[in-house]
Amino acid sequence: MATITDIAKELDISPSTVSRALKNPKMISIKTRNLVLKKAQELGYISKLRQDAFASQRSKTIGIIVADISNTFNNILVKALMDVFSANDYSVILGTSYEDPLIENKLLRQWLDIGICGLVVMPTEKFTQSFLQTNLDIPVIQIDRCFDVDNADCVTEDNVYGASLAVDYLTSLNHKKIAFISGDQSVYTFSQRCKGALQSGKDKVEIISLSSKAYEDLYIGAFEKTNFLMMRDRSRRPTAIIGANIAITSGIVYALNLKGIKIPDEVSVISYGDSRWCRFFNPPVTAVVQPVEQIGSIAANNLIKRITGENSKVEQVCLQSMLLTRASTAAI
Image 1: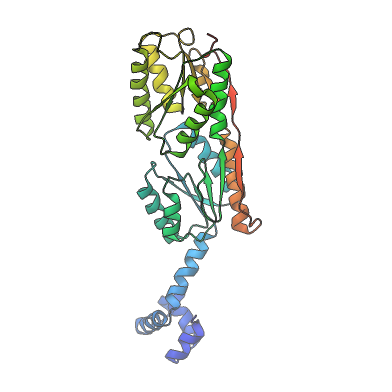
Image 2: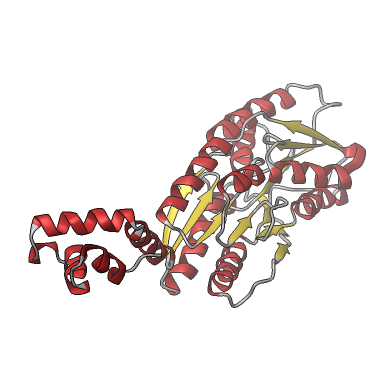
């Protein structure tokens, strides 16, 4: 790699003149400066300066990609991540993929150009492909979902276990007709929650999948599906409904309220995910409480350890949620 001394020898001028031409151009003539810049470009020194600038940026800039920032889970998760990064003097760039692999891929390419030193990603189902295409050579940690990506850590919750908690609790209350309303099962978390519900419920659980991924679409879709469910005759109507996330649960309780169906006297309701409104809704909603803050803080701390070289081992952390019972569920 060329140095200032190499450029000076090529032009038969002093290294100090070359240094001034590159760093303080006002101190020398335009002619000399142009000669220095041209020679620096020929010898590859300009490229080296750019790489050094990116390395300087990379030392303290971390990228975060989440699916959506309009829901409570991601809001809390991002705050937990940023609290740790800020405390350790890292800057953050935040992006949203909206579950679209093309947007995810575009963000990765743009951020690599500006020199991020690490990446926290809530991956889409095509992340492995994007990872290979962009040749990521920085520490990467997956959150909320975990795909088979070389040298990438992950911090998730056990979605199968969380869904089984909800179903097991309802069956303990003698519910035998349980509807589990999910989003698009191409999304990792929804597919895992459906798996958990079916494993625990067997013939007691009916999976109702929406084709939606976005928060507003999930809300509207759950509202419509709940209306259809409640139009069934009583022998086929569910006695309990589980919403696979907060948006879906919102649509469920809105539909039940509009139809004048009492919770939990006529239908018990459980939300996968807790939110403030769940606590203050009448009646308060039983919820699978996710370890959101822990996911964020563990992911951030583990990524910093990879960036600084304190830890070189790939770690996969899977946390468990808990069921918080409230007045929206009752025994048959």
